[in-house]
Image (cartoon, rainbow, N blue to C red):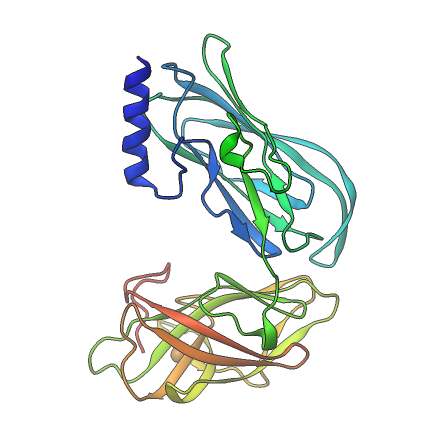
Length: 318
Ligand SMILES: [Cu+2]
């Protein structure tokens, strides 16, 4: 039986390179910058042959406003409590919230792998800090796999038998606000998440780009200009239905990012439009762009070019 579960672990390794050699419960993304973080816990096996029927994750201090992702077949319970301090979150003071999340009612076979996801904000954390997500799997006989051992500074977590999964905090802001290919870019109080450009079809004269811009500050900011070496001109466009026709037009006076709120640029809605494009955006490349905000100043980013089909809006074409 034991050999069998080892084989299952080896098979899991082939599927996900993020899982260390001993197939511990681990976080898919083990480094993160302050701001929004999606904690994806990989659970690679059960309790020595038994399936896992519940997974409880203790939320570390500094991971604030957590929301678990529901999983089909599992019931999710959120335990709330007081945080160890008060955090500034989207302009609000937050002193309590989810402190543990438990998924129950499902059954994850020993030879299967699954993921359990939490989304929240890494707040008031410092570079190099480790946040441990103590995780306990329970099996039908009552047996547990408790991933709660925490490596001391300098100690190799692989030396532990049941290490708690952890995320290490990376530097939050690069010099000059330029971060190449980062999932989320910080500029002052702004967080720019999931920026991307749509791959252009041959002969298509204009390109579109999308992102979410969040404002954690207490004052509104405004995106006033956008430039790119890849296009003669970049405009901020709105789209709306005029009767039966979808109309888009340049947004006059820039795009407001409300205090504690966000602006979503997405297919079928607000978007950046690249005009006088020199070469069509090709999937797999990156488009450099500079966003200029009234308060946060200029922010350089690279937009990964994703397939033309990507996005909720589907067939929006210029
Ligand atoms: Cu447009």
